[in-house]
Image 1 (spheres, rainbow, N blue to C red):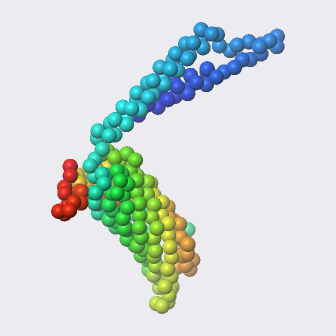
Image 2: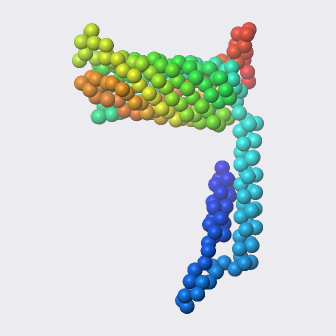
Image 3: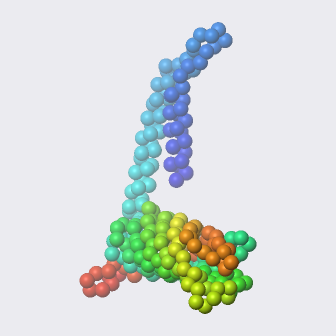
Length: 231
């Protein structure tokens, strides 16, 4: 990665230098900034840097393809859970999350999730169930992911009468990274933002974003004969 960044920086610098036009000297005459020989040298270096960049990029892509885990291939099933922490308006939240997902395309999974939130030092809590989708662009022992979810939930509090429904809908957006720690077991760290259409301000006073720690267990590919374990 360091080599890739260095090569890209050199390429940009050479490109900017080649595009330099001309400037006026003290007599007002236009005087080239670079001589023809210097321009040719810069063009040569720029071409070499571009070739090096493409080579480094190809090597990176090849590495990803050679080392990607079979976990993320179509037909794989996983079960996961996590603990989240968040704060908003001077309040702290603890959240529990469970999920089950299925990979439909390489790196793309979708499934169902169930969450519970509890306000620290208060009898407020909420529960929600929803559908989620994730995409893992890098699928090696250290993998990144982007995700989104659509959920339907309900709030519970001593400030709400028993007959009150206090229902809401939320959309969650997350970004995170996962590491392979044991056979078929991965640990993840993610940051999730949640957007709610309706929350009772006298009960929860709004909810903040949260940082989550979790684990996922990958069962393997689902076949006609049941679960087919893959390495």
